[in-house]
Structure formats: C-alpha cells, structure tokens
Length: 117
Image (tube, rainbow, N blue to C red; front, side, top):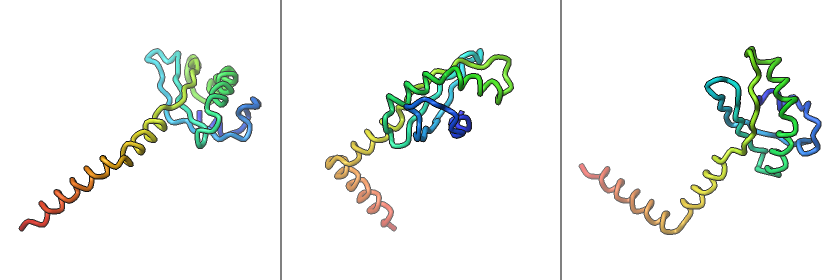
C-alpha cells in the first residue's frame, strides 16, 4: 500500500502534494477486509487526507489487486493511526514537573545503589 501511494497516481485534490505514512495494515482472517492505518506527514489535514483516501479506495483496491496475488482484493478501510496521538500524550505526561521529580528521584536511588561496593 505504501508503494502504491508513493507512486503519486491519486488525483484527489485532498491528497495532492501530501505525503502519507502507512503504519500498519490489518487483514481479516478471510482476507476480505483490510484496515489501513495511515497518517499524513506531520498530521497535516488528517481528516481531509482520510476523506481523500476513502474516495480513492476503489482505485487503490484495483491497484492492490494487480500487485498482490490474492484470489480477491480486500475491501480497504482507512483509519487514522492513533499511535501518534498516544506518543504525544506520553511526551506531555513525561514533561510534567511531578513526573520529572519522580524520574530524578528514581535515577538518584539507582545511582546510589550502583555505587555501593
């Protein structure tokens, strides 16, 4: 899917000059459905990019059918990858003063234990 998107054949205005990262593809057990987790570079216009990909799903399914030897091409369902938001949330939590205090305390305790002979 990444290679197909990288070729730049999509004519949807929402996808023009937009770099989209495919982070994961989950295929159902019967190979009929594929959930494609995506995120535009920098998260820019994520909702518009998702809408553009949904409009191009038929074309992308056809390209996938030519490139991947399956009996049936799976139906493509595009979803924004939540891991980027989760990573940003963790970064915000780690930057909290009380968390920084606890991390420094842990580091001091670990250093004092390693200096004991």
